[in-house]
Length: 356
Length: 200
Image 1 (cartoon, rainbow over the protein chains, first blue to last red):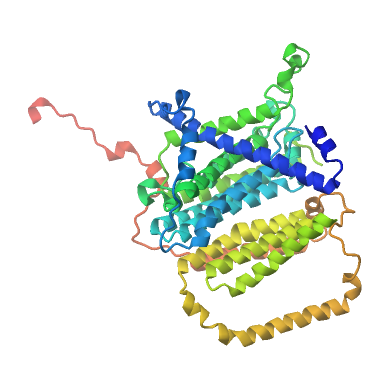
Image 2: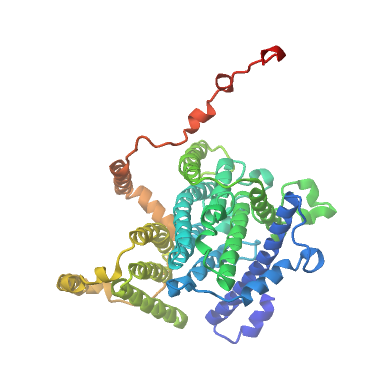
């Protein structure tokens, strides 16, 4: 594909050619993400349905599979209502402010050893910066709606996201120390050599903390105080209808997928195979299962997406002070202690990493 | 180089417009948002210079943390827009004076140091192929370790001081104490009594 395109574009300036090639890659990843979200909505409703002993959506299409497409069309066709005293500019801008960083973060994700849109040196920092962007969409959406419930929701979301970002950042520091690189491709490469050399073994507490703060960052159950429908109707997006609501929803699910993929990349070896390192498989006909490929990443990410849904079906919502004390008094101390432990392991040369 | 120049001029003009927006908008939320835009475009200009670490850290620290708290405060205060705006003419002479001083200083600096600044203008200084996160880290933790540690210590002090200034614990507030709840002993709370038929 790339060869064909490059022969087609070889008459152009190489800079313009790389620009067009990047745009093409971006379009593909974005389209795949939107399809993933459509699938995820259906997946979530079906899984939660079965967990609650219901059948879930089963009317539109075979087994209800076209339900989320029908929902999407409905949301796109609905009227966009702007509240009377709302700040019109920010009201319309804030869904986009949430969606753009959610999509832009995928630029540095290494899907397979070959496919990564931009392999930048400071990839991990870039991800941290972009995930911290998303809070603006939530804050401004709540403020611009000129509604008390929406405003309360956005205040909760802001405090929560700032608090959990710290734990998340410390967990990433642990990964950075173990791999010795900020490049996501090199982080995956540092975990090569089988299930036990993935970072979840030496960094187990950080792995758990990262996933928990990831759930809190995406405002998902059991940390969805920002929405809290029993207390503040629907939180920050209570005034949004039609496509505005659809974009908030899209961004939330893309962020969920992002956290799942990132957890797989940082702690579970990304594209590495589950069976890598089993030498007896390499010579047999099953040699293809030890090859690194994008399917391993997708399987791991799908597992974490299932965990997201599972948690939503199983746990009641946290109370706000419990949420804050979990973030500040439990998760952050755990990460700090484990970074200290990691330093000792690093100096004593215990563990999979070597002193550079 | 054509593409880079176009990108540079687009970002530079956005940066100037955003900086003007910070002081010209009447609504403080709009001003704060212009400041965020200015930080982001500054970060992007640094990216053009291949200083990716500084660019991303600028965005991470200022946009990701500082401005969130700033916006938080602005929204909570619910400032009356007209009232705020009336002070503009009073402040204007002082502001113009300060602006002129800064401009004069900058001009003097460029005048004196013109040999260093006026040279071949280029956006990419890519004779260093190593990543600049590593280079910055190595410099900070070897050559400048003392100043780095002192800066860290001052920041820690600032955190402790601001917490101790604002921390006040109210009495008569009912709240959960997780430790007491966990250590509660059911044997002390519940007394089992055998009731025989004749006792009723």
